[in-house]
Image 1 (cartoon, rainbow, N blue to C red):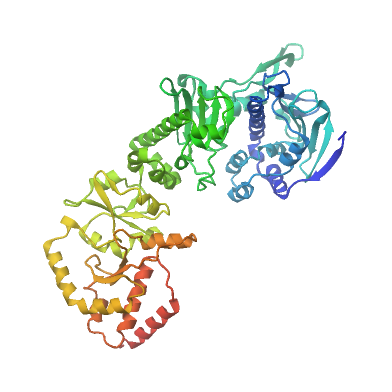
Image 2: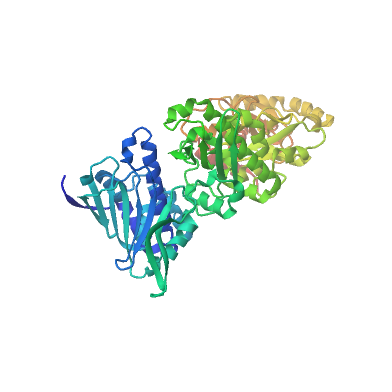
Length: 632
């Protein structure tokens, strides 16, 4: 290919990104060094991983390191690594385009807050471009491990929409990133400044980060280079160190680096497990904010797997179940082989033991938080509660522990905050109450004002208000808790057990006889829409409501399935009538407009459920007609 030089244009998204870096994130300029050092560390990790099966990639030098240098006269800062390096095509693909699917989400997440926007850079894999915050030209010289000396490349751009790529010769494998600093960035031409940034953001990097050693020159009253190199970070895997040696700040900075999160974690746990089936160390974090792709069960990128401190993969989904995809951290095994594959992870008994142990540690963290710091647990639940609910089906072995961690809105509380635990509910149950009552709906308002709650409000019985889309699925696994069955207020015939007195039972038998003819006429009229019509005492203010069979699918769940484009069972609801309501009483004497009144009441019941009318025009026509028949 010779020294062929090409000039190319950046992808549109890169141009947008460069504009953001250059014009919007100036006050957070220190992040450029954090991002470039992190990328250099990743490059070394990739080489180490690939060299497991191909030792020749080391080219006789397995001493991996990162070096940061500066040149006051040339006004440059250089970040250099001897990792995997880039081929010509790699440079074009990775430095000229953003190939990751998160590009669009990256731009939609931008808030205008410089600190928050800066935090997103690494999270979306676009850290390289942060170099343009401080540089008006960036030069990348790189040779991919295993390629000939003459197939190295030089990539150059001024961040103006174009870049050039040409072949050069480079003896050493790896990458040099040379930043030609902007006119007002002189402070970066200082060993002290660069070291302080490295100490702040990159101290935990397990590879040595080297800088030229300096000493004081009495004659020039300035620092001078000694020609030696010294390591400026601790250069040891943070998780491998003793907990007593690690400060709170170091834990937090390590989390920010592996998660690319700007905020401190909500909680963390650091454990070394020895003996038994497997030996491993885990350092696991719970973030304080949900990531943009939390709802994608296939996006499990939280756990980095190491084997004997050698990086293996950064999305080891086999080490954490899908419902804990919010967990970030590292797991370092002493037992797994260095050439472990995803297929081996899937079948390994050691991996199963690591996973089970790590899940228990996370649940322990959450239990401790729920018990000792209610405000912090409320923050966790607001961000990740819906995902944790998936664990009721995903993780049968920990079902009871997860159930204790669940939180719900309730008629006991004024607001819609989900703060009520099942233990709280049981502690407030009425004497004689043997069930935990709940109602599901599309929104908090729909649940709170559901007609199914009327008799419960009358008797002062607490009802849980479930409005998350995952709730109906979760309830199929949560049938009872501490011996108390969970009962939907909108399913089956109302059975309040000891909460219902004998007089109410007698009243119900009496009105069933009184309304026998009305119920038959309603049943005949709505036979294509309902399974049955019956009177009920569950209503106090509303005239009618719809109820599903005890073992049937709720109207709420059927609506959700249809909205998702899935088939829902073609089952019919039961129409329950409130015999005390004037509109229902009217049906006993209505002759002229009986059909219209019944259809209006049925449509009202559908609307009260949050459903949609099949024929809204007929509803409006009937309603208007009945309004006109009412005497002034």
